[in-house]
Image 1 (cartoon, rainbow, N blue to C red):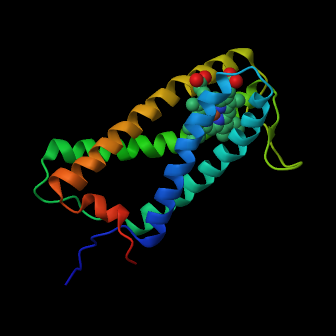
Image 2 (image 1 turned 180 degrees about the vertical axis):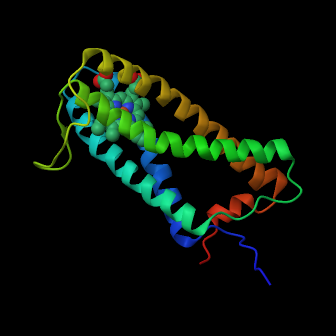
Amino acid sequence: MTVLQHRFTAAQRVIHWLMAICILAMLFIGVGMVSTIEPKYLTLVSIHKPLGIAILVLALVRLALRLRYGAPPLPVKMAEPMKLGAYLSHYAFYLLMIGMPLIGWAMLSAAAYPVVLYGGVHLPSILPLSDSLHTLLWNAHYYLAFAFFALILLHLAAALFHALIRRDGVFEAMASLQR
Ligand code: HEM
């Protein structure tokens, strides 16, 4: 007999909430950074770069966990368009969680700016010096940040809809504290 999985694994739940905090912080740090020309710009950038790379590493671990352990099935009674919306939003999340940090890293590489993690640890450049590539990637990083914000708001609305109105266990699959 196959036992249906009702919750994500504990590791998947921990990484989900950890990443939620990191990504929200990143979006606000990013907006704070580009809204100031004061010296705190440098402090914010020096947090933004390593945190972004940490998000990239976490996203890759999360993708590996997802491929290994899968996900609980969506409720049978959920309408097909809603299920499709859920699947598409999950693909979009993975694309953004992996794409945003790579674009940030590539954008700095194209301008020959150093990508410094902590202390003297520098990441290698992943693109040759190019003004046009830098502009293209800067614009991508800028507009995708808005798309990321919008996706998070939609995701939050959907989570609340499941938790408070449908009460169908979808929210608990990611929020349960049980092992
Ligand atoms: C999930 C990961 C990331 C998110 C959500 C994110 C988000 C943002 C946001 C919201 C902005 C402000 C956009 C604007 O209004 O102009 C920004 C700017 C910036 N990001 Fe990221 N970012 C991420 C990863 C990275 C990484 C890994 C790097 C570099 C290694 C990076 C480098 C930068 C730089 C240099 C700017 C400022 C550009 C400027 O001063 O004009 N980002 N980011």
